[in-house]
Image (cartoon, rainbow over all chains, first blue to last red; front, side, top):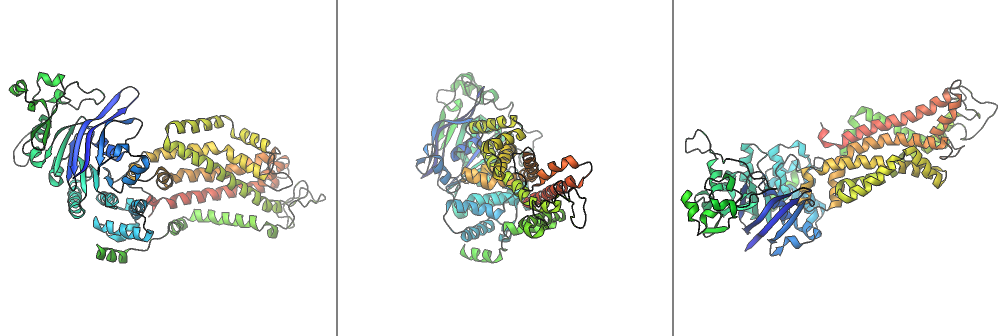
Length: 328
Length: 294
């Protein structure tokens, strides 16, 4: 059963002078219990997608132009503010990028965890506090630290608290927005391990937003590569890592250092992301693409399913694209 | 899970209440404690004026005017032979009440509207702040005089007038503090946990804005006492013969050359109140900020 299905979602930021096309016609699906990695560069529209699911796009300037977000068979985009408030935190919760700023400095961590519980479940305060202790222990923090303030915790510990808050109501979907980006590598590994263990324990589905392909390989079942607000490649781990199809995904792998091959220089993708207020007419990736052909400048590519469940948005895989393949 | 919760429940240290925690931290700040003691003494003086004052509030003795301090009148007497000490004791009632209530009025209205303007932004911000800009274009003293003149003299009307004329100041302070805090990620995180706007303002934003609000309010009490004094000076505030520090100050002005004690003692009383309030305000601000805990 599909837990979350995003269809043709388009989100723009309408500014005075121009429009930022942050998310353009993306389709995503997430099965119950699965973890989906959403990978892309800075500014590719990852966070906008996540905020779109939660209904937290700042409006103005943000506008959902089209599409549907179907969560547990209901379209979230048609829900009222009050209904969304009930869903946020209870059914869908979010882990933020920077644990240093995601906690309220003047409330104890216990208060912040039990607040979510009190907000969504009608239980006595003592019980909410007990549950907060339980959550703290679950993320590996001794329960006696419940009355301490965020500044008394280290960065990794704070991120654990943030995760405890997100999981406090047993959400069915957890959105993690670059949960490890602000942490150093050893703590990253700890947090990733913890997320994986907790997911195994409570069976929450997860949408993991990151630019780290290594982390995705570690904990996700499916991967969506996003570029300039479009999903350019979507598939399971084998599809993306072993049968890489889209030139952009290939470029991403090319720019990663590898342990098994000796290289002197990494192979970054040339150029920068197109200005989201002025996207190219054809394929957004065309200006940087090594396999570019004439068609790419004129006509936006369609989705092509090259093997079951492996979808690529590129002219290379169109049936009538021989001219492109020749160049390659 | 259940075994874990049992073991967890045992280990949890008892949570100290916010009040206990704050007062413990406050007690560490010696100056603030001194300020608080002075304030409490002043409050006691105000409550027990009848017992403390050796003479009546408007007990005149025209054969004994403009005396310098002596054993009989420890702060001397004024131009009508009234005991200055007794009048200061009685005046503390009016001055303290006027000071605190006016700030309360200003803070409640200005703070509330400022928080709304800062949090929601856009049109509500524009409407609220433009109205306050118009109010600020009128000097607050003139505004207070106008309000007081419209409502008529008297203590309650003075408080309303003084409180109302300071509303824009509080609104600006609160709004700017809210704007800074609103940008922080934990506010977005609070949205993501499904908190309502009211809850976010009250629980997440305002506690993080306390520092500038407390400073502004403790300075504001001083300003309010002085404004109330000016109101009585021009005959719109508390009416004579009711004793009030500001009124005594302005009445003593005429005699400042030969009988400086007439302005000295009410002045000292106002200064002590304001100084101790500022100390308490500073201490409170530090005690309420968990990041400063040592």
